[in-house]
Image: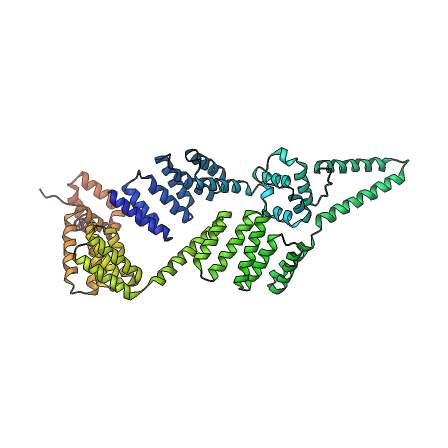
Length: 559
């Protein structure tokens, strides 16, 4: 049993690596059925479920893995990943921290923990909001403030701990906020003192308006306050020249006037060369124009600028994703996967993960197509035949598998490997190869024979008879199919369970057994055998009872 579990696990791992997630899940499930206490199988199936976007199932398997072996660090990684995909970030953080208690230096857990913390605060933390960071980095005054090491450090601390009251009240942080919000905060005053000053001015205005002895002062105060209001409004709505050019570019881009859009984005970049958004905008234009090299260069430049200015990781992730899209268009799938991985390392976006999985499938198909060579497949098949004749089935299997890789559309190769699997008592795999061969060539007789024998070995005589029956439709003179059909018939008749199973598939019998009146009659016959004579006097009931007797569903003992 151990060797069978390991073999299933190895095949499942291969399927998982090839992007065949459903097949991997099926194989892991078969292995778990044989070894329900194997924590590694649950861990691996959890990963396959997660890759198939089945996060609830992934979580259940990860929890089972941790329960079976609490010191297995990868189990915590699987559980944390599933919780993160379900957006249950606080729980994911707790799981990663539990795992780090076992292995404090585990790099995977440390990375995942950091990502979970970012995701947990990303939607709530104003200082991590992409729009705020864009405004911050496009404002020359704000960028100048961030050159101060202390201010930059405070900003980083705010991103990590946005609810710290002492940080929120720090004058330098308040000044940054004031600049972005369009409120002019002086060098010597923080935002709170500025608000107090404005409140005081408002009070002065009221007092002056109510005074009858100082009308001139009242008018002056009112005029001053109105000017101040206008200045504040102007500061709030004004955009930098670079932002104005970007907006013009966006309008042209929406109208698909890409040349005009590019001109405006170029001007924006000249005015503010440290803003990565303008570079990604230019990259978007080049992408629409199918100028792939220029698009890649702009994305790379944007990432460099973003790194220098500590731009939000989500914006950097988008730049990498666009590079991956370019490589996908060029059908350079390996490079596309590389850039998607870079994007995911910056920000775990489910949509990007799905795209990456799709490209992995395309890459697999591309590699398989490039590997196809019918001549080499024939050579491998002949080698397989030689070893099969020598009863060296494992080596024969290896050559047949290589032959299939070289020519996956040859039904004969699947038939040969099915015969090999049958010799190795791997009947489920023999059945699968037989069905694959039938799918390629529905009239290929040998595949039906292989399938029938595999089903016989699995004691599914009803399905085996149907398969040999199909073989006889293709070749009525096939003696192997005739003999095998008879063997199935005899064995199924000897097996009461098989008889009942075959009969249960008969629509007429299903109808009889689902009739409430017939069920009452059958129960009465079981409790009162002498009641049979009375029921047999009714022709309609007698016909149904005889059908059940003939099928083997019920038996009559004579005494």
